[in-house]
Length: 286
Image (tube, rainbow, N blue to C red; front, side, top):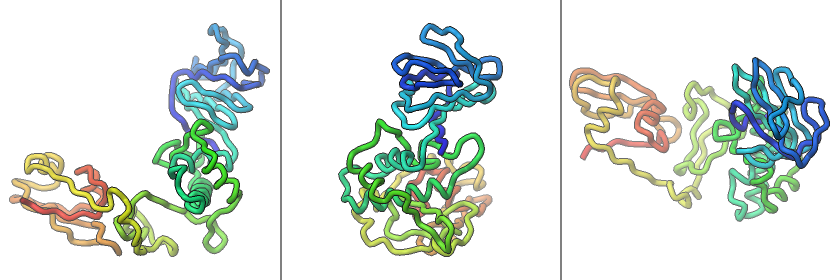
């Protein structure tokens, strides 16, 4: 898997024994630099060692300055004068770097095993293709590389090696979350532009009250609400009327009512405009 760690004009590293086809010293510091539309390999003093073309690769485990230590290889991909800093890593090593960041290492072994299976499945099922397969943050799964690994989370990965979730022989898209509010949502309502998926159905989650944000409240002044929802109504903001919910109480559509004009919006629009934790929300004017 190729995981995008970030972007930079240059990236320094140690620990590799080969870069751009050149044998290098593992204890020495080297740098990939974006220069004249390609990637250059430079030594500690900044001297040019090799031209790597559009992509430079350093192999055999690396410590990347500003990022940390990673299994696998470092790939520096030139992209319009910048470098995409990518970690190319085997699937099981990728999962090691995810489980430790998506679940507390102190959780019970069975919970960590379950996390390992869904993280592995999600990683394989949602590869975006192109220059890299995944982001290292919540746009994909949080991935911290070797530095973040723990004994308990690595044991969970080893115990479930190569195990995945399938539906009718195909990889399932195993979405997961920290808090459900007490009930999950059908896929056609849970995502903007979502479609119905047989195994992504709403179910009750009776244990969610353990979450510190199982219930939550946001308070805005009238001026704040009008500012945040500007363009969705005319005149003075009167109310937000929820007109459609999903299989859970989450908002699918709502009407933003103004004294001189109203509009119908999605629950996601309200969530992002107001910075809410979820579309499971109701509005009360004091």
